[in-house]
Structure formats: structure tokens, C-alpha cells
Amino acid sequence: MKIGIVCYPTFGGSGVVATELGKALADNGHQVHFITYDQPARLDFFSENLFYHEVSVSQYPLFDYPPYELALASKLVDVVRFEKLDLLHVHYAIPHASAAFMAKQILMTFGIYVPVVTTLHGTDITLVGKDPTYKPVVTFSINQSDGVTAVSQDLKDDTYKHFDIKNEIKVIPNFIDMNRFSLKAKGHFKLAIAPNNERVVVHTSNFRKVKRTGDVIQIFKKILEKIPAKLLMVGDGPERVYCERLCRELGITENVRFLGKQDAVEEILSVADLFIMPSESESFGLAALEAMACKVPVITSNAGGLPELNINGITGYMDEVGDIDAMADHCIYILQDNDRLEVFKDNSLKRAKEFDLSLILPVYENYYKEVIEKAAIKASLAVLNAS
Image 1: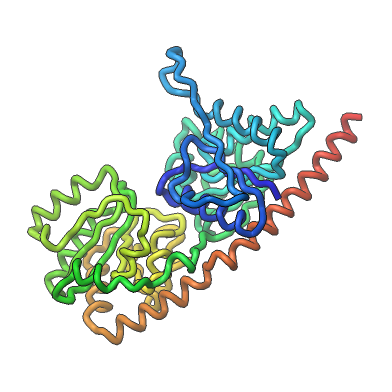
Image 2 (image 1 turned 180 degrees about the vertical axis):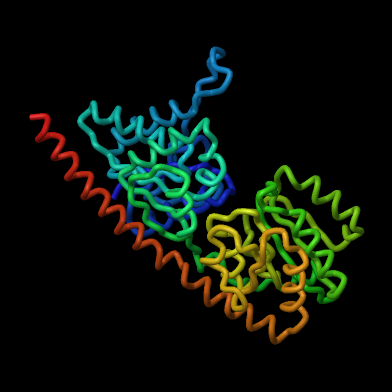
């Protein structure tokens, strides 16, 4: 198949999933074309089956805001026509699904019908999509897609609850490349971080309010009162300054390191004993899955799709959003006993293997084929009706 993938080229979950999926499809013999405004962060190697098409946005002074959606739609038309794509897979509804619909309509004037699969990732539905400014367009674009997927059952249910969706939504969970995300031999790194054999706790996110990074700091302060430990804060975003100030106020700066954005997250996770994700909302919890693949148990909130990933009392624990005391108690319970910690680590790895890319990739491939076949029938009927 020749597949076009539209995504945000950032470190966010939707961009990571889209890029890793595209790379896996290319490895499996499909021709994959990434179409976005910058090269995706995880598109870091050359393959004869991988292509990147940059969307250039006009800086014409008439526009206060560059019309990216129009530029993307035009680029999609160009790539589909000249690369003869079989399918477009757009990740994150806003504005990719609406741009794909516009491109599909334009392509039909050339006698080309290209099916569109839209994958919903979370905040495109739970946060931005609910904004009255965008809701009608999001609803229309999802209903006009030839196929729709969601990364968790919770997100699927939330979409039906808040939008008038007529399309069937198929749940295809996020996945992990176990070849990349696995426990690495990084003893020297751990010795540098925790020279006195302290426990190492990790949090990774984009430091937005929804991630509740301040809760991570508060939880870690309570851990420190019981167990010698170090905290690694990976990522960057609007809440970082607040978190750094909070560390100073709590007197724990010597035990906390802010590492910023990191490409090789798996190397950092390989020195971790515990991962904390106290998010207010998570459609799936990809960062937690990456930690589990590196044999790191997780302490999470019970929000969104996290209960579909984290098995309470087995791979870690889940508590109510904002319940810092309960999360801290569960962290201490896991960390204070070596044998108990090893059991949780083994369980986490076992659970992560259920989301191995090799298991999820065929689900996507079969879904693509199903959508393409249905689109071909639909196009044939349209021709017959027109005649």
C-alpha cells in the first residue's frame, strides 16, 4: 500500500505514535509519505520506503494567522495525485481531519477517491474539540472520514458522549516498539545520578497543567521523607518554571534534576525504579507504557484510558486525581522492599509486551485494507449513479 500520514511533528503522543507507525509500515514493505510542516521528531533514519513532504505556509501580509489548514489540504492534493496514494491516515482531528476532507473533495474533481482514516488521540476530543469554536467542524470531519480509530475505549466513549458521531469508531490501542524500549545496561548513568544507591523516580511529559507536574514534586517530597531518592523530570513546557520554584520552596532541589526534552528516553527509563503519572486526563498513557517496557512500575491517576493499561496492584497503582498522599504511600510501598520492587518490575514488562508493535501493526494493516475496499465500492456506486 501507499499510505500518506499526517501528524504533528512534535514530541507529543500523537506525533510519536504516527511516526512510529509509519516507520513500522515502511519496514513491512509499504510506501509511507509523511505530510506535515516539519520533519517528525522520531523520523530519525533513512528508508527507501519513507518519504517526507513539507507543508509550506504562505506569509502573505493579509493574514493575521497563517492558513495552515488550506496549505495542508493543497499539499495533500498534490501528494495524493502525483504519488498515487491509496489512503490518507490523519492523526489528531484538528485540523488534519478537516484538511483531509477538503483535499478529498478537490481530488474527486480529478476523478480520484482517496479514503481517509482519522485517529483520535485525546485532547483533540477531550479539550480542544469540545471548544464551541471547533466542535461543529470536528464533528463533521469525523463523520466524513472513511474510517475512525481511537487509542482507548475511554476515548471512544468520550467521543460518542460529547459529539454527534454517526461513524463507527474502532479502538486500536497505542503500542510500543520493544526493540527500542527495553531495559538497557546503563549502570554507569545510574551511578552518576544516584551515587549512594538512591531510588530513581522518573516523570516525563510536556509539562502542561493537565499533567499535574506539581503533584509529581509533592509526591516526591513525601517519598524523600521515607526513602533516599532522586527525581528525574524529563520534558519541557509551561509548568516547568513553577515546578523548579516548588522544588526550591520544598528544599529538595539537590534531589531533583530537570533534563528537558530527550530523544533517548529509553536510556533514562533504564535507570528508573518508578514512574509517576498523576495526570488529570490521559487518553491512553503512552509515556507510562514506555516506562513499563523498560521494566519500570508506574503510579498513575485513574483518569481516562490509564485503567486500560495500568493494572492496579500488579504493574503499579492507580489513585484518584490529586490524591497526593495515596500516590506517595503507594510509591513508598513499592520502593521500600527490593523483592517487592522486582515483582512489580517483572509484571510491568509482561504487561507492556501485550502492546508490542508487532501485535498492533497487523490490526492497522487489516483496517486499512477494509477501509480501502469499502471506499472502492463507494466510488464505484458513485460512478454508476452519475451515469
